[in-house]
Image 1 (cartoon, rainbow, N blue to C red):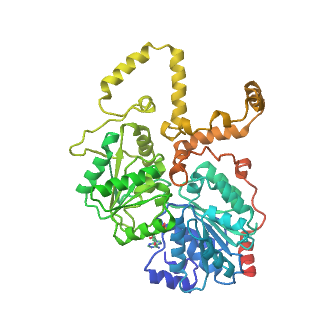
Image 2: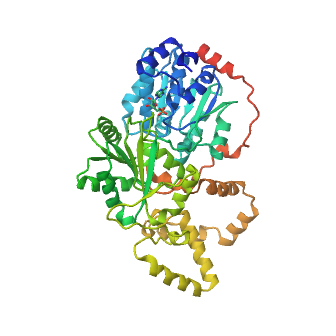
Image 3: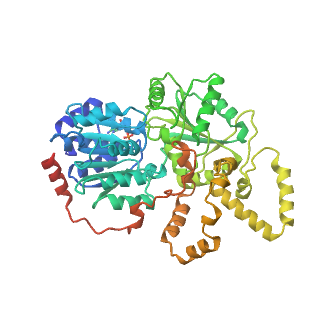
Length: 527
Ligand code: AMP
């Protein structure tokens, strides 16, 4: 199929030609005609599939007629990270070069003044991260009641990052008559429910199953002891023909530590994580794109969706907590028909996560040995829960088993319960004892409700929320733990205190009364 068959206007087609694209990607082919018809779209697509252009190209055409009013943007695109927001802005600049659309990028870490000035002049396209948008909204710098097209990108990542309450607030300020485009790399039930709440009779477009690593990426895994991981990484970096690579860590604090360690061993490495000021993040990314930095140590959130052309390698310094992240990570390489290599460093404690990845990608990741390093083996789940992954644990394990056998069953039961609790919140992620609220700061005993009455009240009260939470816990499992990566190191449980409205609605809504065509008609009239 040709771009000219999708219904795009001549100026957009000219920009596409200037960019050198010859054929639309499958998501573009499927989504663009519906977007141009004014329909809501529910797109299941990963980054790297051409998803950004699938909404920016038709939006440029839709917004081409009409004028923006001060502080009243005509379209809104929400992105989970600043880098993704900046990438979408770039895409509007590239494809909108023959149009006169005005655009504003509202992202955290940059001064309000310039952003407010832009809004005052009126913008056609507003690209924002949820937090900064809400800040500006609350200061009265922005009104959302003229939004014609609303895009939620990377919805699953928004959910992981705890942005859903913010997004619900934002949606409640938007006009009901609007076109909504909703994209997510995966479609777990909570995302579907969210889509049901925000979209009207959407057209669903799906490209590639949610978790299929590209065939152009060669994968391998080294199973080493935790304390050997840095050595293993250095070995791989020295023996592989690395042109440029992302090196993923699960925690932002490890990103900085690993980057310093690599630098001290003479590697040209930068770091990218959510604690860095925006100017430093942008500078580092630019240096990496220009080849001034060869290795970029990063967290999932900071690097999600980053489009760096021709990345030769991806290294997982840590096995990702979520199997889906494995696919996202290694998908940074082997793009656009090029080949790439992805190496994962697993430690004995990672057996469960590695098994989850194998299930998802429907194959085993080939194991490799690292010269000069002792290969390790995965611990059983029970051993992993107790956090024992060091060397020479064979004999110790046997002794422990003997001791276990002798213990009274009751005691064992208590221990297992504790271990299960620890599995939910790993020791290192829990607040250290001294940081917890001191006793005297807690509510005085007499003001607290007696234990029995709380328990009794809870057992009397039917609580569908708790049921749902339990299901969700099971579904989402470890994904929740990842939330700490960029914004906060404290694990957030579920939605925190907030119960999003969409969770309280039934999964299926009746069909929308307004035909989608009216939305577009209204858009052009009002615009
Ligand atoms: P995205 O999934 O939006 O992150 O896009 C991934 C990459 O594909 C970006 O570098 C785009 O510039 C590129 N791209 C988007 N559409 C096309 C196309 N039709 N042909 C070739 N490359 C494209």
